[in-house]
Image (tube, rainbow, N blue to C red; front, side, top):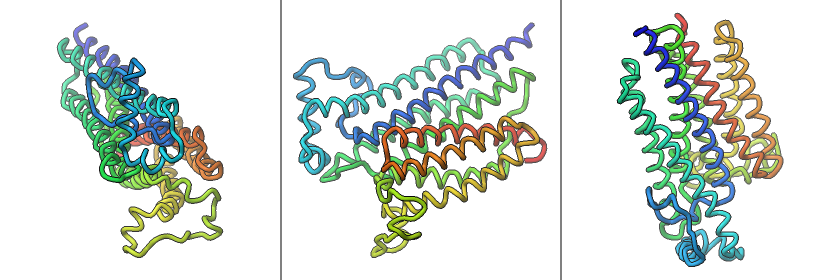
Length: 344
């Protein structure tokens, strides 16, 4: 009977981590809406505790709106466009919801972790990994504030696309870590004292290629580079668009929205080729995991093209970001299966 207790605990831990992972996916979606509606700079202060309470009176709303009116975004973009208090309340809601969900994820992770820890229900070797995931979640909040702060300085009208990419990629890395750990614990629950899956060479090079694509996607979002073209496959009626190379090619590849858009749309096919290799290698071990990888990247490509063709329609672009998170989960699943096999 005593040997059964750790297996039951491992199953409960796995379910808990999948719930947190689902919340992180929701966080990525709400973050996408926040970015696409230009809501990120609507809350100009970071109050980890009291910030969970939104303005409750008209005076509170007017005070928050007054803070926003000092930002470069309002002075140069939304103010001249005629933003009123009602419009401000709309963008404030999405930023507040994004931050609130982050707080809820923190509680949904920290409190059960403490409960499992006190009860001695965490299998050997997993405590450090769970603490690392908790710290990543906290770091995510810090990066989010650095991102917002980057858009509040001077005459900035938007957040830094570098900080946005750090914020998003940390979330996706945390998501992958949650999935990987949940899969390890699920296997432990089925087999008992199962060794964790190992990270393979295939996972390394496919993951590196996918990382570059996700990074470029984050830069596209941060620079509003999705609007650089509403046609596909050509941009500006040519394959390679005109871009600013006056400061060098490296600067252009990290700052110019036209070149970054171009790189994102065509590096996608490098990522597709890599993911096809991963899916083929995992297929003899798990057809569902292979199908998940194929489905995720296929849907992602279609949504990426649709995002361009629709001029970055809100819900198409949000769906594109959602499937990006699901692609990370599919990658983690397939890589985990390879890591359980003798040859990876």
